[in-house]
Length: 290
Image 1: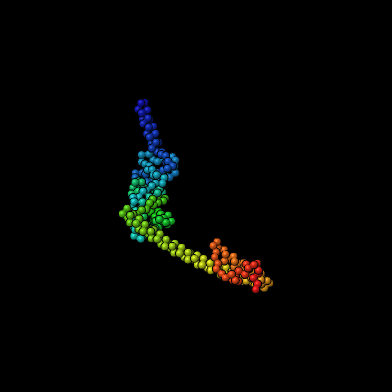
Image 2: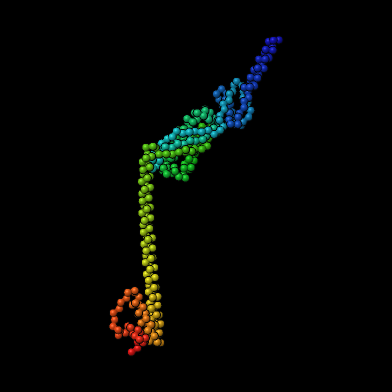
């Protein structure tokens, strides 16, 4: 009886152990592949509870999330023969676990295989461009071209390249000072040219302004001369009419003006003959008629 109970216990234990080895859980962040004696049997991508043959089959789990690939900074020679240090990285995911298992086995081996592929395509694509293209809006197009080129080779390994980014692209340290001096010289030359052009433009504006001032002054002088001439003509006309109406009064008026002009100083001294016609209106109140 005891032997039977012991045998039943062993069978139950084996059944429980086999049951535990028959079922496994696939996490939503993972995908699994069932392997029998080293040969792939099936791939499970959906999360949940799955079953395998105990003792004869094993399960290999692969990451379902996006993984990072950091490339070592490498020197790239551009089309205009400039050395630049490019620091790039890529993001990838395992799209086909069967191909991935058959070609690279694990993530570390995948990174070792992808690294030279990424670096070679970086050199090829960026080597066809000028240095200024890496600093312009064309940079995003270059990254897409690198991504597509790497994706073609990675697809054979069951890997999908999600993105490729250039973290930074700098000149080597040995070239930085020379480039700085060259850029400084170019900016100084540009500043000198701008100042020269500004001085030339200022001189042109001043010349135009002086010309306009001369023209305006000449026109104003001409108009003033015309108005002065017209005014003097009108004055002479009025005086002529006045002289024609009363010659004696006109002579008296002109004499008064002459007196005013000749005696406007404080110490005026005049040496004239008493019989001079200049003082005819001062002689005994007479009008000066002869």
